[in-house]
Image (cartoon, rainbow over all chains, first blue to last red; front, top):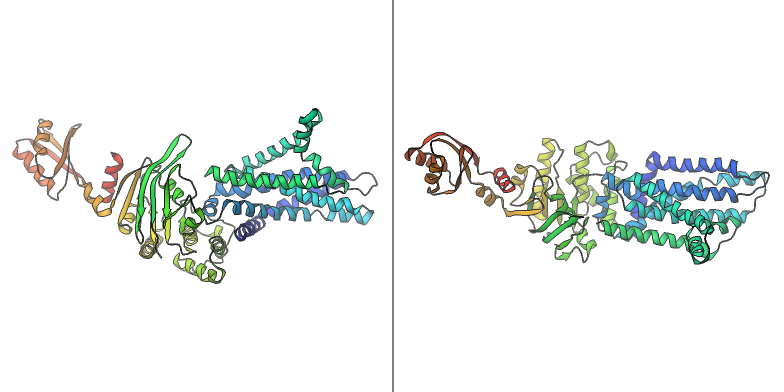
Amino acid sequence: MRQAVTIAARDLRATYVSAFGIGCTAAFAALAGVLLVFDLRGDQARLDLWFSSLFVALGLLAALVTQRAFAEEERSGTLEILLTSPVRFWQVAVGKLFGVTGVLLAAIAATIVCPLLVASMGNPDSGPIITGYIGLVLVGIGFLSLGLAVSASTPNPLVAAAGTAGVLVALWLAGVLAGGLGGRLHVVLEYLSPTSHVTGFLRGTLAVTDIAYFLSMTVVGIAAVIAVLGWRR
Amino acid sequence: MTAGVQVVDVSRRFGRKQAIADVTFDVQAGEVLGLLGPNGAGKTTTMRVMTGYLRPTSGKVLVDGVDTADDPVAARQQIGYMPESSAVPPEMTVLGFLRYCARLRRVPRAQRQKAVASALRQAGLGGVGAERIGTLSKGYRQRVALAQALVHDPPVLVLDEPTAGLDPRQVAETRELIAKLGRTRSVLLSSHLLSEVANLCRRVVVLDKGRVLAVSDVATLTASAGVRLELRVSGDASRAVRVVTGIAGVDDASVRGDVVVVKGTGDDLGQRVAAAVIEAGIGLLEQRVTSSGTLEEAYLNLVRE
């Protein structure tokens, strides 16, 4: 685990030494602010629509942040030094996930001004805000792990970003398709779609099935990273 | 301190392309082994397989007796690898990067500072430790790449074109460093500079089109280059071939175009061939020595065949 932390610390530092990390965090916070303006309903201090929009924005953030983790490193040649060091693939995968999660947490933390602003003008229910943020973290980590798997499979950062967006859109589409189908296929597709698992967070509940879904997504993503690293070598 | 490396029948395929096939050689403990070959010969692929960046399609690599397939982490712990690209992260400082590499390579915390200082010193990076790597010249970035290979004091060094892009003074310093390192480590280095390989290495492996053409002492390989003469004669060239073939030291004589090509060994071969041709009444218009036994010629002869 020490190697994983070493990798994560280095990646996080590299992200924030450059304008990329600060830019991503600032852009996400700015987007959150803009969404707040559009998503607040009349004179109601409710943030469920805002959180709902942020879940979608997380997909974009995941695509941008994870393309650097493997694809950009492979393109620049620095991945070779990492993968010829005495580290196991799981340590690399977990370290990379820790690194991008740091960026995610910073970006999410930067949005805290929005609910604070709403709280200063009204009396929003704190429960859904807390579960909304927990949901943002869980959804974000799930999306990041899928993004890392795509990033590990290509040396082209643009392809990695587009591929991650494509995977997340496909998962969202599963939910859309589920609406038009019945029977077992409807159940399976609805379960696969992240959309059906964020509703609980928006309502102020932490359902075990929803938490398990995003944790499973994370595990699947990390397993895919390890498999891809081995397969490509 | 020293450990040997054995590459046994290693092949690597990328899709349909066979990059290297049945490559076998060993790097003995305490030697500097040169890996030679034209562009695309498979040198970098071979080194990447040895260091675990790529898995062999078949065959195995043993580092100090440890099979890289059985225990890749233990094998990589023994190796310091300087890749051809020498890409090092531009946003990090030299010290920061070496400390990161030291942690990655499991250098114990108590020894890390000393290990980093030693790597800095050996790679000639004194004075630039606090500089961001992206602000350094190519030559200095190359040295940083070399320093990261040294930071965990590995018994085996794999250096892919370690002097590429360096100025003459830096080349000389790096050669001196490699020669010094080679006394206590097993070093495999690839280079396009045959003079460098001739100076540093006792043995060389010559690769071409993914296959090993020769594994030999530099001295033996150089001697095998022999002498190559080109004769322009008046009259019947095939008669000149018959005359020359009988001379001691001549290995081969043939007509190619309008010249007679003679291959053989011996410092006085040219004189004896010229004398024999003239004595046979054949007009000798011109005799040129196109090869006189250097590593370059031996290498070119091998890759031309």
